[in-house]
Image 1: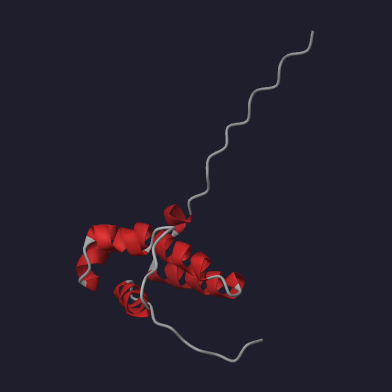
Image 2 (image 1 turned 60 degrees about the vertical axis):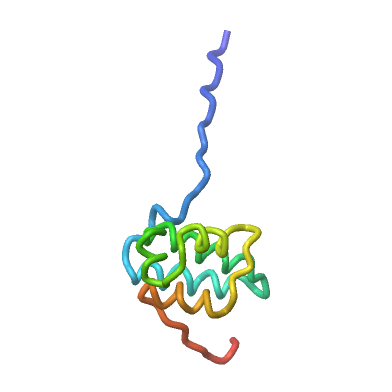
Length: 102
């Protein structure tokens, strides 16, 4: 009789665990912008990943937003204003650059 195969244990991938430096954050967000097409939800999720990697409490303090407000803005049902997105990006030590489409 054959031995039963061990069950494969998978975990959900969490990019926040791998974002350790401002360079990592910038590269991740840049890649997300290139891959997102016209999906703002994708970018919002990426900002949420970066916020968790950076520390929500610290980020909330730097943006002048509350922790619950920041969580809500970057949640799946959130709808952050462009002003909030700019505050979050700047508080992370990042900046936007515009280039012609490829």
